[in-house]
Image 1 (cartoon, rainbow, N blue to C red):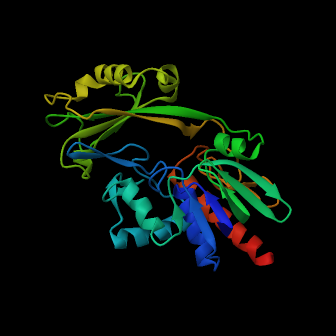
Image 2 (image 1 turned 90 degrees about the vertical axis):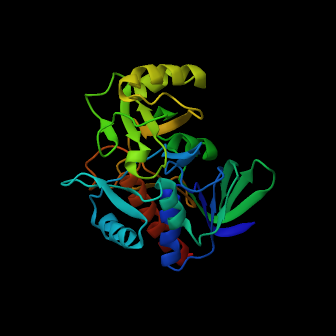
Length: 315
């Protein structure tokens, strides 16, 4: 299999890079994703009769590029305002993964495909597959978290990530979370970063909570069993469960690379003459947030797509 541009990782950065390349007339591309769905941390999961986002819950808009695109998404019904007046939080109308699938519609994607290594040669790149064989490309864009990207090409990237453990709890009745079904900040128990009620959020027919633990708590408990992690999380958030007892189907999601502890202050990184890295840890110069988020992934993908379109045009 061959393509002019192979994009490793079909999360938001990879999808936006692919869309940008196609818009610029570069259609000989391939998105390669190790999971069974596109989206990366735009992740939604069914639990029993309910449904829960367990990666990004929402996004904010600070850049003109994203603002213009979000207006289009609103008109199409892909997203809606969830809460916040001065600083609106937007979320997918059917869950965050549905937004990713809408954005990836029509793009050439190969799912369930794990890349073991990437080798750059003077005339192209070879991507070695776990299943055997290789994919050949003129150029490669790696959107996987920086530590994984560095391992694929054998370099060091000065970015480390914090993990995040997410408890997914089904309830037998309403939770005690106030409208709009989202709580974070100092009112939460130590170790808990955020709680979301997806019935109140509007994407689940039954009450399902996503409980996000802090990076410190997650590091301390990451190697423990799902059963122990769930028991600890449930004890911490019991005051928010109300009369609804924990139901069947409760789960733990483990994000090993949830948030960058350090970021790179440029939207992408040239790792070779034919290899580029991008992702939510790569921030534009105008981005003063200093942290990974939906918008940083979006802008990084757009910028790297524009760069590669120019590079392909020159070759």
